[in-house]
Image (cartoon, rainbow, N blue to C red; front, side, top):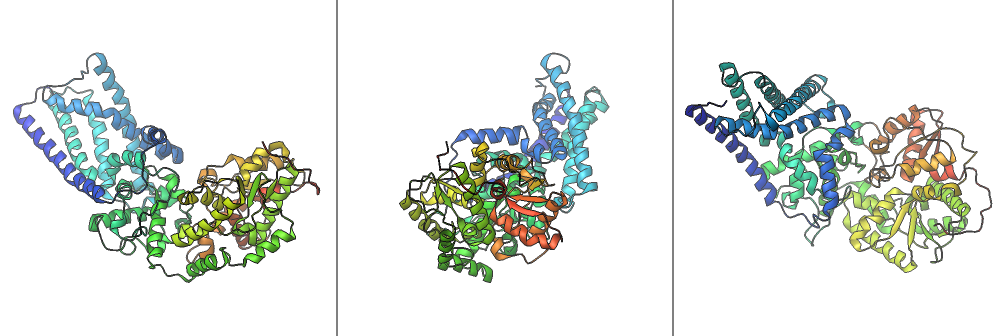
Length: 624
């Protein structure tokens, strides 16, 4: 509208002032809340490289949005990219009313850009219509109850696109053209103040959240000082926690991929984050009320398997696991969590040094009976047994199979004389005292033994030793046995004893936590054939149900997670289920009897590799 009167300009100024004012009124309160939260401990924006790469991939290119939900993800991406393209057009739209337009529809760059944006307008209109149908007609359960605000926002976006396209063909200075212009302006002025009042606040905050989130998957924050017990009350929430709480878009991806929620438990990762937001809105970051209770279910917090499916899927940078573990810390470290099973687990760790409650002498008997060499500093690898490898019968079989393969390949190794639990279950359940005691005792023993390199059959042990122990200054080089076996290559002979197809289950702590997907498959392909893939595989793998201490707590509600996963694996028809984690193998062994009367074989990749090895091993040699 190039010939707007002073009256029309005055009306426009009032509309803009009201729209911007309402936006800032709510957005300012959110910023104040985030700023009033305590500083994030051990936060460092460096190194910038990974942050910039993640920002470009996840925000600008919408990589995670599209990759994990291709069709609706692409629709969301078109809406996002369309709005980026519209930024210049919107500024020009307002400037036009004041005679300050800088883009012309008739010639030069302006003509090209108007038509370029018209293409995006069509893409956005189609995409928002599709998303509306999905939200209000298809209604996937993980999206939650239908909210009117979603429909209003969709209508406003569609109106913006439709009026822009209509304006391309109508003279702005005619009555129809002016009507279209004002409709477009009204939609803009209505849309802006709705952003901070709805879940669409993520449009402003999520780029910042993605850039500033804690680096590293499921990174558990340090406890700073004697008064830091985790997330107990509002004053314990950090600025990162608050920023992430207000960034949630409520898309439900975390809910969709949560094994606890999927099998009928109370836990819903989305509601954990929205509970933080609700707490902050009511009590602020200085609130003295407990976080667990009215806004967040304590029961839900302790049902988490820490599989990381929620955090991996989140498209706006929210890290659920540090929050959930922080809530557990706050409950356990302050004595507010009372659970007989948890108490028994912690006592087992304290008294026996292992989560299973066996006396340490049982580990020694296993070592002596099977003549496992003691690490003396001359061997290349220290073989870390872990609780499952030292005490669990199936775990012991995996250790012995791996030992056979290493001897055959000429890899020298030894086990420690003494070894305690890494502290993984205590760490994930929030007992920092028990974790630190386990870690310090083990670190001292490993350093005394002069260990340089370590290998373990347990992804949980690998994660805890390589990452969590760093808080105590330990930087041991440790890898999972799938990595070592894959690197050995031809030194692990093809096994004629394994001729059946193998369906492989990706352990959460090997896949999402360590990003190791090809190595176990390479081992299986070497000794058998390319593995069969279950319905949920690789990054989307479904948890076995053991992580986060759940193996020792058990499940009280809904369908058992291990049964759900075993049903998927059995449904492939493969006669062999391949695993790469002793926790997974134990959980599946328990579930197979409940799922089928003729269960498939259940073998770790080390057992597959050792299936047809000769009885005598050659003289050891080093791995290069």
